[in-house]
Length: 261
Image 1 (spheres, rainbow, N blue to C red):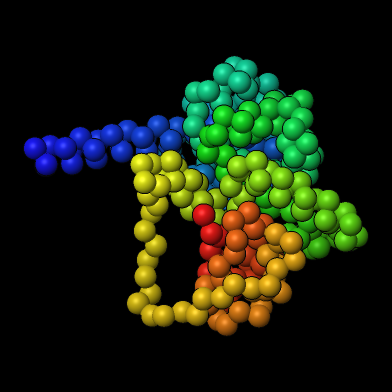
Image 2: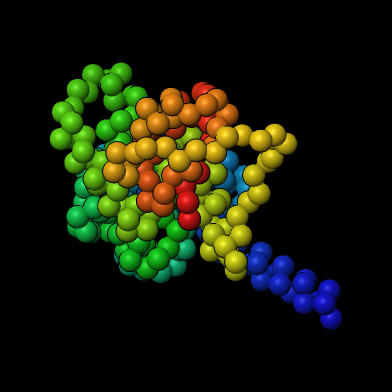
């Protein structure tokens, strides 16, 4: 009886996972991190994810539909107008993945404006408590690519853009970077399982120092990573926004950043 119960439990869990792997993709018009993000979604497809996807008109113009079709192999790909209403789509899908995010869409969702199909899908998904995982490269004012492209923003403007991302995270979205989209999407779907199971992380077999850095508000900056010893584990409070620069520096120095649940 115990073996039968265990087998039934495993089957239930697998069905839950399979349901979470049916994902709705929202691709907005930013090319920052787009290649890496699409590579992450392709990796998820190899692990059993299937997609329907909506591209904004600007995304189709900037990225083209062919790279998205190649990476996602979507059952359907809509440009600007989905085949079903956003409300119907977010009822049918438990996982919503946003591989590219524009400043414009970030602002719309942060201010609860569902006036575009892309913003409506994200906002309605958050309202229904779905898995919403967003790669923020295109909307993050601290992304290194912005400086390389000649952006020179004032601190108040940066603070406003960070605020839009913080609001989305406070609404329940998982904020990540394009190169971590695959890992964080998997964490999101496993967090919905009974007991909040998450994929196991490999152990190095050695002890690493654990630190809780001083932070400015809810933003973990590159300065906090630079002051951590190489190989350290940084523990940040729930709701922390990790800047793209901090994430890049952490990878370079072998520092692990963990956000408290």
